[in-house]
Image 1 (cartoon, chains in turn yellow, brown, red, blue):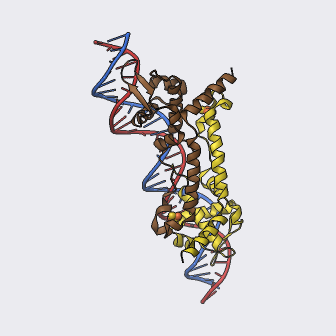
Image 2: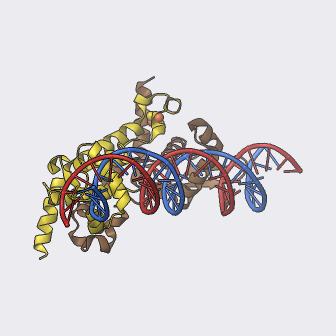
Length: 142
Length: 142
DNA sequence: TTAATTGATACTAATATAGTATCAGTTTAG
DNA sequence: CTAAACTGATACTATATTAGTATCAATTAA
Ligand code: FES
Ligand code: FES
């Protein structure tokens, strides 16, 4: 069971890179090279993040991408939802033919509870927090 | 992001059916029909559960499957691990080339923490618990 | 002895994930 | 002015995972 897929993973790294250079434009190429992310793949992820107003872009020479949304406001939950879809109970749990009575389904009930736990945990992890932790860790190691 | 896939889902239902008739053999066919699970698919799941000593089987006419392990000792975590593999951080997080320093990777650290939370939540949910809840709910609704 | 069953395993189909390629449009440095 | 460095948009391919089907041999109870 994979919690984060590559796209979410890459997106997080790209956001960390952009947050570290907040206020200036970084090209997709430089991010891809520095973080070993497939270039064209990354470009699609960046465009998706523009659509969600996490970042902005500037075209042309010296163009690139820049943070827009406050890193402290970007949660891993949000990124998972963008790139892997909303956390969901397996579909079959919602087919009336199976349960007869959705409201009565204990399994569904338990899983929704856990779902909420997972979401709230991932919500505690923001890009801002990760960045600060990363900086703190790199200082210790110097 | 799917938490439970069909195989885990079907396995849980099959176990609930078997637990409800603890001590007697139920055929794959009857479980499949009653719970609307694809017959051949279910058979493979049942065999997998035999290999993990959750259930036992009897061949031939009047044969079928029967619970072996105590339903209270079967957690959803265990079933997820059997059918969807151990919950894991995305692989790239472990490739030295990327992080440079695994021990220093904050993202990995955070995700492993959440992973533990998810696991411990799913461990609270056992087949035995689900069965009791199910029985309680069906009485209320009668 | 035959019909109902599991054991084992191979196969197909559908979907999701991962990665590549292409071309048009924009911008700035020279 | 123009070439090079960029993004926008989108189509394409490859691989892996999930879901489901099919087949045939072996077992067993009636
Ligand atoms: S199995 Fe359908 S809602 Fe639970
Ligand atoms: S990205 Fe490699 S261990 Fe975190």
